Length: 74
Image (cartoon, rainbow, N blue to C red; front, side):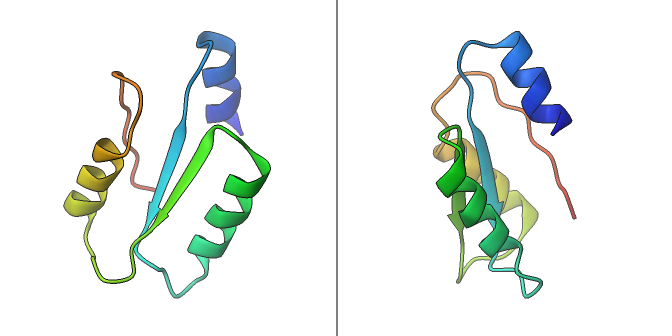
């Protein structure tokens, strides 16, 4: 929630991209539910690919804005 507050207080528009490698803990389900509730959130669920580097690449390739911040939230 702090990230959303910071972004909404400092930028007119922004997006949050969640890239998940089809985690067995169900993170992908949570990401999809958040995406349905919030226009600024985009979830990308990768069922065949794994790994942080390629997840970052996927997020960058699907981003709309020129400023990108990456976080590993494991």
